[in-house]
Length: 323
Image (cartoon, rainbow, N blue to C red; front, side, top):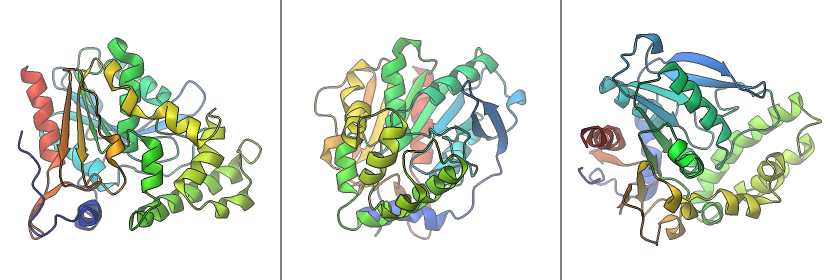
């Protein structure tokens, strides 16, 4: 596996983090969309790389779980799905509740440790494709969620292998980090989207939400959002309880599935607290790159940029298939 080399002159962590949004303004393909109903009367919106019915059973399916407030339109999302399609695999992304452009029906949403939707979706997929190898990729929040899923389901997991990219494995430290320096710009961007969706949800389900519409504007940080919305909505005492119970860093020892973790040491969303310090089981490959920013990893040059993740993710899965 070729290690990541940042694009010449573009080593800066913030450039790495922001560049994909400027380089790739439009998705690489038009997805096949599908909606499936959940057991609690809600729905999950899927984005496929092609018609599922025509997919040969012997070729893998790559599942993608996006990051906080992400969607198919996030550059990394359609890029990784497209890379799977280039391998002759079927790619599919499950939008977390409320992230596909339409608010979900129930009060609950999604969070970094919410695995019931992922577990339901993976089981549903296994019923449609009983003999097909299933791979999964989780990006940022979706990566920490996938770590939780692998730790909780363990040998019952349907996944042959998984990779997580820039996962915030220590949620409390990441919540603090994003309130510092230039990282506050990312916090404001994410919060803007979260508060807009929250306001729509309150308008639809005013009796069921833990906060009044008039108080949404007062939320100034991701911690406050988690304290006032995420925690009460999903059965946690407070933000600290949510962070402690859902951080993936302490659950890695329980994972039995082949897993690769990709972090950048200069990730502006994280601190060194996300880097595992205890020795990891043999089934986990840990890749710490000095550079790359948060889900950036842009190599090549500004004139001819390459998205390293779109090369290394399929390569690693290919290696697993060979083994």
